[in-house]
Length: 102
Image (cartoon, rainbow, N blue to C red; front, top):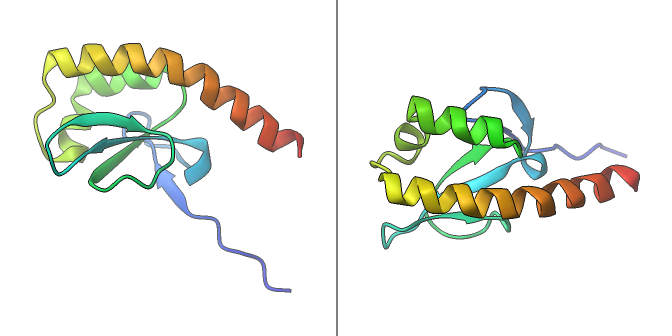
């Protein structure tokens, strides 16, 4: 049988290539709101980050999300994303562990 191709994406902070399921997608919707998309299916321009808080902080420092989303991301949005990222990080890592166990 032919092996399925695994979609790869690059973390905007650390520039590491990983499978799409190992990364967290940050999306800028057509309504110009920036939020975290765990499903990976929301419409809009997306950028991918590792599931680590250090990568999120690096992306904030280097303005990598601004470049990837092709729009300025304001500091209050970064603050909201930081809170969301901490909550999502635990869920994301738990889901990642479950996938690796299977």
